[in-house]
Length: 407
Image: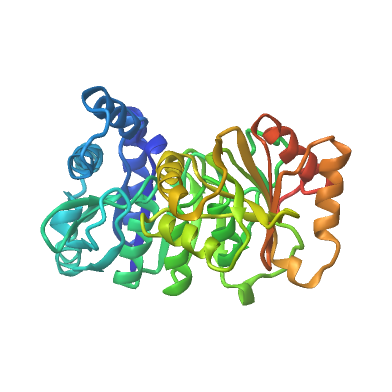
């Protein structure tokens, strides 16, 4: 019946009981006649605990050794899951990223998959085995273990599905699908039956924790049939589909939030051509991504420039900017970690007007101040004070009446 790729996150394999339940789900899929390939994350909080341990040993752990350490978490979970499947009477084999041949570009902690050697997987499937792979990791052409970034077991699963031309890739998590907002923040958030690749990509990029953004990019690029489902229920989940496969277009699909943001503000920057380019090129050279940018011009020939980065990149960004002070001659630079980004996402924004006005008015009515704004064809994002995050999400969700029955 073809190949089904399944991915189980850390919460799904957090202890022995959950691992056994996952094994039963895998076995059922195998019994239906499918060849099954499974990508697995580290158990529960294993990765966080390993990172914490590393920082107890070293203030600034070497990137290579950190990746070597973190890759061990998945090795534990795949071995235990293979044992659990075997206990049910099925043949299973666990494989690391290196054993599979997931070749990466060699960037530690944020590597990109360059190629996958599918020969080993296909050979094991032909022998009737269930193949259980370590997510989140690969090996460079220099034979160095690399990791793909937090949450990137999703990306491993979709990349494997694309390589094998699988019938479907099911991402199992601790929620029943993709919602109009985080159900822990908005109790009446509505589960979608379908969302588009573009909507899901924006949700992931803007703070929704359901899927890793790169996995959505790969699913769109290689037309992988992707479904987000719960490990703990039999609910149908949410299909991530092409825009032309949507049964009904909705104007707004979700409200997301991201507290992992920080703002860098430069005051008194010379208002002359080339200055912004010099600043942002220096930041880009250190592989730091910038999201929002706002510049205001002052009467005295200077400007104030602010931009956002992820909180983990803040100190590196500040160091880079301070290194440019003598060359550029700005007055000062200051960080702000007490911010969050709230965003509205919807494919229907392309053809509907007034969405931004309604969002801004909702925040104004709640007396929530907007510090920065950015928008794209299907998103509107605002930077606000971090303490207002949950209230802002609920306010926007209510204003657009996103709660209710599934769609």
